[in-house]
Length: 265
Image 1 (cartoon, rainbow, N blue to C red):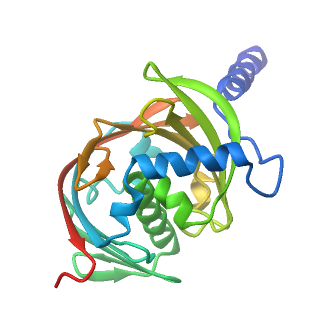
Image 2 (image 1 turned 180 degrees about the vertical axis):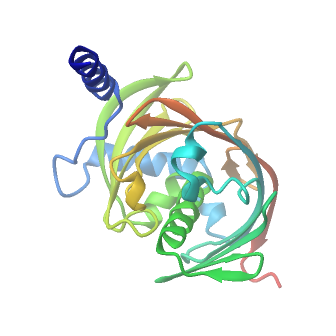
């Protein structure tokens, strides 16, 4: 029994050693090279056209792996988080999400400093439910807006080097969000930006906005990009948990989009 326990502990230690981590910034501010790459990516993905909009409405369809919802049932919320209709105001941290699944409808309303979550019209006051919803809103805004999100948040950014993502050579930028994702006080995100098209291909992020996910690291791959009205949007998303273990988590697709120009009623 002691021998078995020793080997289990050794295997777990080796597993953790192989897991992805995100370093702490080596300085408090941004470096010029990283700032230029982030700005070039934002320009390439259409930040000027984006800022002409009042809001974006999107529809997503997704599916979950079998393992992670058992470990993180509040965050995954698979009885409700299947399809979703979502609205994001541009230049304002305001969003609404309507999720539908076998359990019915989950509505999330996020304004500065407040979050409301309703299940089939009944509001939840569970702090974990609210933290999870706030985290999901900010994450999905980030995935949708890409580099513009980090400029919007005035994130510090530092150059980390290069990495091949799906066969595409990318520059990796380490960003720090002083106000983190959801209700997290701070988060770190690595942006992998391809060197040719300057599009964001992957984000690697800390998941500290929920008590049960503190210390976790996840990768989200942004794929099948299309340009609509001058703005580049990913249409296929794939999430992998990287720490504390490596496992596929979530696949989803952008199946509809409507953009409302500023001034249109």
